[in-house]
Amino acid sequence: MDPCTTFRNRWMELALDADRRSAWEQGCEHLTSCSACREWVEARSFQVRALSSLTRRSLPGELSQVVGSDLSEREAALARVLRSLPRMEAPAALDRAVASSLRSTAGVSHTGRGKLDPARSRKSVRALAYETVPPVLERLVDEELAAPGRHLAERFVGGLERVPAPAALDRRVSGLFRRPAPRRLAAALAVAASLVLVWRFAIPREPTFERTLRRVHVQDPGQLGSVARGLVEGLGGGVPSAVNLRPGEER
Image (cartoon, rainbow, N blue to C red; front, side):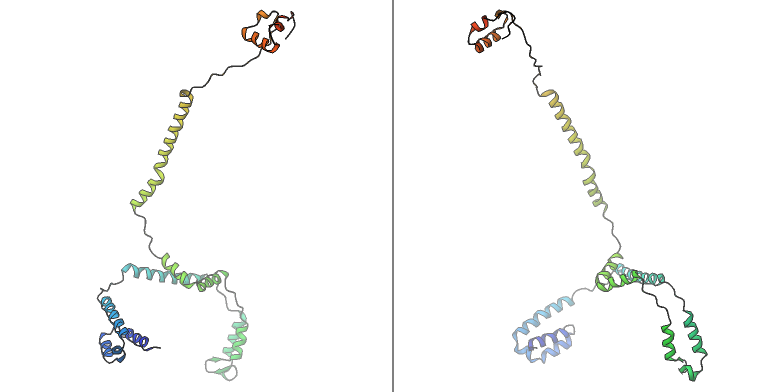
């Protein structure tokens, strides 16, 4: 480690003890020979004085209550989990083994005063029936071990008091989604009704005529109208074709 790093680490250790730091700086040769460290010490000394001049604030009472509530909730949750575990009675083999061990003489079944024979103890323990851990408890423990920080933060945040939204914000949000909708609907209905009235009464429409064709038997060219006579002359090439019509003949 270079001398500058060693000096600065030692200075940070003594930063909050002004007397010891001053005495150490006076006897430090590196501070006298290194201009970079002197500038560094001046900057850090200013920061230490500024931070030391700040007023100390005590923790709010609400924080202590929240932390205490969170800890009590964790203890209560652990107690509920332990109470939910099934209680197992000691097997009959263990009762018999313990009773036999207690009835045994000190020289045969005991290794010393108040101690059971280790061999019999192991045999008695092997005779015990064991129960597997409940799946729910195993899953909760695995999740807790996988991300302990996240679960701790979730429990802490969940214990915080929920602050309701201000009444002014509630009224403003309610007004945005409730009041304009009927106004827009009424305006749309009024526009639609106006368009229907304009289309019905203001826009002129051509009258519809029933177009029919009639077949007329003409006996005399004089019975034809001027339009029909001109049409016959145009189709027949002249008046003689129309004059040569015989009675009862269709053209």
